[in-house]
Image (cartoon, rainbow, N blue to C red; front, side, top):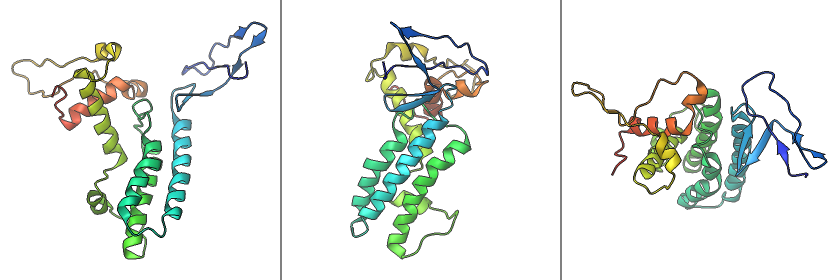
Length: 220
């Protein structure tokens, strides 16, 4: 019974609280719960999850940088960064896809810290705050985390529509855009206007929007 919890997912300020029990034991109510590595909070904001993965990724990055201080081959450092840090920042990101700067900035801050360290190893000094790191990002073939998330979402849509992901339920939720003969619309998917942040962050909306933005051939 110690491993059983109850959580109510709602946006209401005063949700209905009903006591559930198994046998003679009441199930404890919590505001957050882990499920397959993702921290779900009762309002589906995913703010606690983003804070948690940023903390873990930052600690792991610090360990990687300290442990590789004597390494001369920086390509090994790149592999370790992907294996131990980016894997934490991107795990299940289709579920908690961030859209606000207050969530994007902490994630990208860890990303930028890695590139600043690479520059430090090469030049002996850290770049200034707010410095343009696009050149080193291109050289190491590592785009921003936002760009990586959008590409992953678009590729998910491609795999779903080409039946490399077997999920009829998600497939049934995708609406294709059929433009009129005189229309200039080039969108592959029909995306209704997102009137709430919950709808804008939903997985189906994210994968379709990303595929349209990147112009990816999702049927190829």
